[in-house]
Image (cartoon, rainbow, N blue to C red):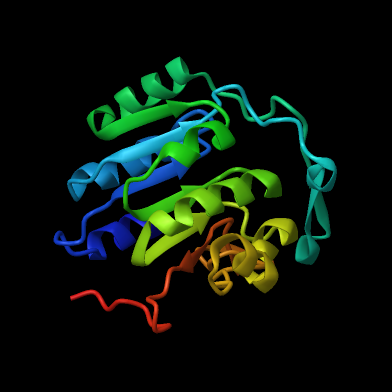
Length: 213
């Protein structure tokens, strides 16, 4: 609903599509397709449809400090076939606005050059996140938002505060991540309100966001 509300707030005169990286079984894809169809935008879905790649050495585990949890990963986790994802979107979403890009992110994203107004990255691995951000951040319109699913994960959220990485890879300042640490406060939990998502806002060249309307 947070992402749908963001899409509804973007004026029609601002051109751009919606991008999802990491579809799993297609649940979020179906939801995003409904929101994209409602505002007349296309949804581009990037996934290997074979699960996660083999984690690099620094990607084998992500820490969630406030929960004292560590999430581990291995090749093939979170696999959903393209056929399965398409079937779920056809049943619960709007398949007509969807374009599917099958393959590893480093193979499919570099040739994607369309402007986008919103991206949702549910990629689990920091190496995959780096690939997605490098490819998609330049295409994101000023004032657009890049949502991530693992906002409480230290290894994921910290990338959005890594000034050196952003300067070296994107010639831009680190945007930070709203919701870093505990996620946006969307659901009641022990000790406060939490969720798994957060987002970064792309600023204009003068360092300000674009007002809607």
